Image (cartoon, rainbow, N blue to C red; front, side, top):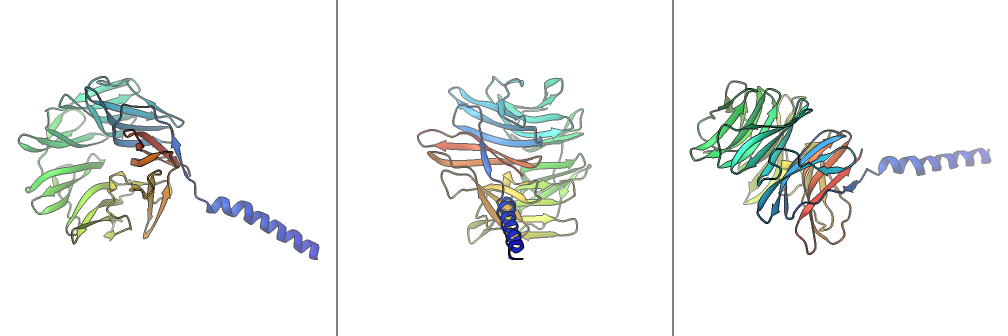
Length: 349
């Protein structure tokens, strides 16, 4: 009997030793090499279609000015793409979107804007109908695309319906559009600065109107995350006694709910829905040699760190994307004695 009990105890101890730690220890972040660009570099956006395709955009600083940067992830390595129109000219790349089987990217060069489109046949460009002073944001879905910015006459919302561009009007009192995103051709959202403060607008296929979102008082909006399920998550900052604090405002299909996770004054533009169902976003790190990420799951917020980087004084992931069952980040790292250059990290599982 004692021998049988000893065997059972040994088996239980072995199971606890092998199985439980593997289940309890979360997967960690690992560094991914990125081909070099001329520092200092600026990252604009990151988007992934699945585990074997992601695109990152930005621009580098060369001796003669800014030059566009485009990188592709094939599931194994990052490579630099220089085959798009205007790759060798001065300019920059902005938001990247997947539209059906194509990749669409906002491209600004010589003051003019265009949409780069990559299909199985290669690259092409769709020029904008006019030149803007600023190109604030871009979004695209099957059957529609929008570019928002300003020219000498003020706010501009340019809409492409698949064949032509038109200018869209916004409600009275809208001064500026900070960003735009869309779920479908008849369901787009924008966050605006108005004469009465921050406001969320919604396009219903006919016109833009106030979405009547109950934003917290004295707040602004950084980003809006639209999901196929109908869930909407808005991230921004609220000012209390002059101090900014991050808030999240979520629509669950029935009502809006506001939460204030312990994120300080984190800028939430890089927020994504992870493969685990939680919200993930890069946050300011308290360790100069490591990146830091927040995971927000309901009322629970936890943090994780990227790999240690020798002699790093500022590791700054800018954008996150879900790539299958993994998370990808893209950003910059500043090593002591050098200017910021590109970095990327991945979290499995």
